[in-house]
View 1: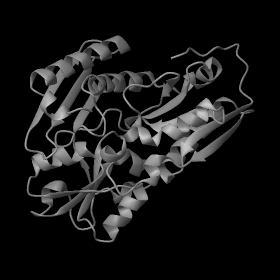
View 2: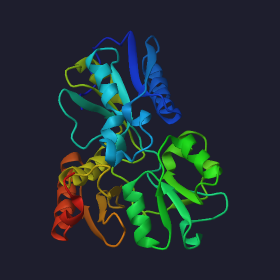
View 3: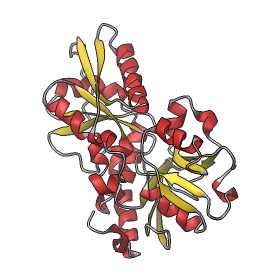
Amino acid sequence: MVATDAKRAAPARLVIASRQSRLAMWQAGHVQARLRELYPQCAVDILGITTEGDRVLDRALNEIGGKGLFIKELEVALLGRRADLAVHSLKDVPMEVADPFVLAAIMTREDPRDAFVSARHASLGSLPAGARVGTSSLRRAAQIRHAFPALGVLPLRGNVNTRLARLDEGRYDAIVLAAAGLKRLGLAARIRAIVEPELCLPAAGQGALAIETLAARDDVRSWLAPLDHAATAVEVHAERTVSRLLGGSCRVPLAAWCVPTPQGGLRLVSRVAAEDGSAMIEAVAESAGADRETAEALGREVARSLQKQGAARWLGSS
């Protein structure tokens, strides 16, 4: 991250590139409000863009190119200087951020856990055999199948409102999606139960917002520096290190979650599973420190442990 330069002139105008889904626009609006607080004289605008990932809804993400489809058009806007920064859900950002881009800030994390939503049932554990559970995530599907093999786990694409509508139409008995998105959209009342990490571990970076810009834009990186939340950035770096080393993407049922320990260190848990839920492995490690270098080392330790347990059998060619 680039430290804030107190002598640098405040920006006159900043343009935020964002997907046009309701949740993405909320996220961009959240960043817009923070920037306006920091730079009251700055005009902060949002450029809404429909991405390939938003357009193709009849196939699973792992079949059409992965989560990177949600950010490519936004990066084109950055390259063309139509936008100065782009706001993403961090879990949608590929583990390797290619040149000439950089993640300039990771904002304070919302609840990283998954949420169980149903009109008739109280939790995953209360669903009857054969109940239809919708999710867009291989990670969720694999863990749910592992814990509840009698359930029918079915694909569900679309934005948050589309998924809720599919549930309300009776196509599913329940759906599972990120708690953060529901809370940010004021839909927390739709959550029947939080799916605890012991049952379904979150995705790397889930609940965190990432702000991307061009690496060469030192001015923008400086202006964004105050939005970076150091603790969140360190924790998600540990998670993304595991995912990066294991080739994590939407094609891989991989989960990772890092939390602070009472002693001031970090605790990282990660899982890899068979897509059909027939088997799953887990690795856990703790550190005494909580800086970026420690997070990197912790991620490497957990990745090695998963590899030793045979994670390669499920990682494929991702």
